[in-house]
Image (cartoon, rainbow, N blue to C red; front, side, top):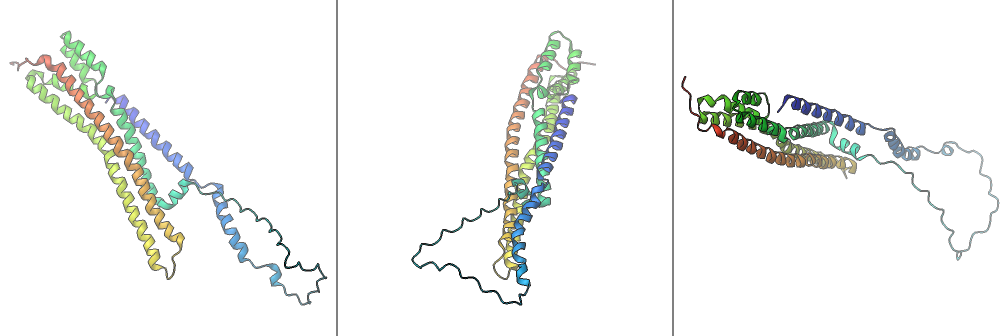
Length: 303
């Protein structure tokens, strides 16, 4: 890969990481309505627990006789219509992100955030690396072939040596060993090709690693959440509180959900990019052998 392109990969990955962190912190920051929801939920309980002021004052004087009121309604009279019930006060629900963060906790949230941002950064870097112009550039093929047609072998070598692409390194290694013979040149090209292919696979394999680790972390959280719920059942003398049981179950479900949400695109992107890189590497081998095929009859030169 060219140095300028490599710098662009790092810049794009760093920009994506910073933007993602800022966006998640902005969404997860508790708004002013979150405390109002809690107060609105606790207000009826506090009002019900507070005794009425009239019950605390003893009235020493006997109650005055009530003035005679209207006669009682007969038994056959139809019942009076009930007063319309007051609609319940609307309480804003929590956002899905705040519920997920509460269920995951800070430990699982940081782990999954790190895995997801690393996956996105690796995806951007590998997408930029797997471009045809970075592996088998067309300009290099045309310029190299033009120098060979004009018998300008030194210029062809300098052109390939100055290009940091996959094909450039392979052609430069072949021309450097051409004085020892064509078989040695092909062997040198194969060695450099294997080394460059290993570099591409090495960076790409981290995506497969994330796709394997994420569901394992989710499974770990599932087991931990279920153990927490069963401990609540075991330690409760009577019926366990549903809220405490729901807390462990939500941890178990959310860790599994987020782990699979990271693993599925990671494995899919890994296989797609792997197939693309293998196809480009095969193309590099075909093109390099075609360009160097004209030196097949070159033998070892005597010193």
